[in-house]
Length: 272
Image (cartoon, rainbow, N blue to C red):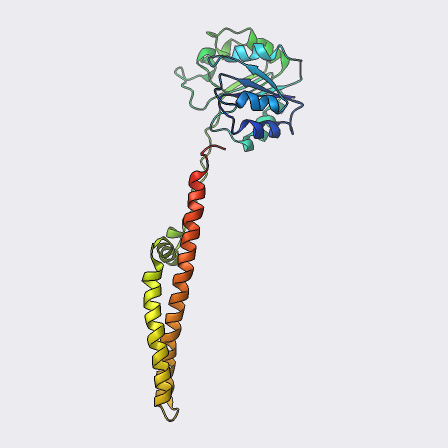
């Protein structure tokens, strides 16, 4: 099997796409339609054959170029678009096992005016993927740009359809909506000055509690329920102050880490 990528200005993705395709195919070919970056150079350095074509090339033009290569049992042409992902490759490869001479998927946003996708002219058809046998490529190469998919020979097993729309992954529920406690925790993390909001009151509670504990223990000459209760209360104030100071330090450190990670994500490119 031969996998062919139809690509333009995809220097950030072409190498990984070629490497992944080599696990499925005996040969990988890149058809470049007017890239202005280093896509073509990277493809050549990866060891695969490259075919430069005009950006306005049609499906019959692509089929005609592929017929110039050595004949293989099945050819899979994939448009390396912005919505295509490496995880889609096994699905595309499975299309080659359906036993069809031509399995043509057009871009999901293709306008179908007549209501029948097979009546779209090739000059208006944007390829998503194509799985074809040598006979299928031959039939496509004989078509003209004004021809429609319905004009293909009826003796061939042909399927023409629109590609499925890319599935948008469900947004994960944020901490702010998980629970009331999560909302409070998220608010604390997003606070710019946790040392002031929690550290300052904690320091006051700790100092007051510590001083009161020493004075109370020295004032009472005997231990009874009242003295024990007052001692425990002052100790609790001290511990609350200590806990508040520790919390403020942790929130301050976590806040800095969150902002640092967020900056790293913001610097990443949007494409793969």
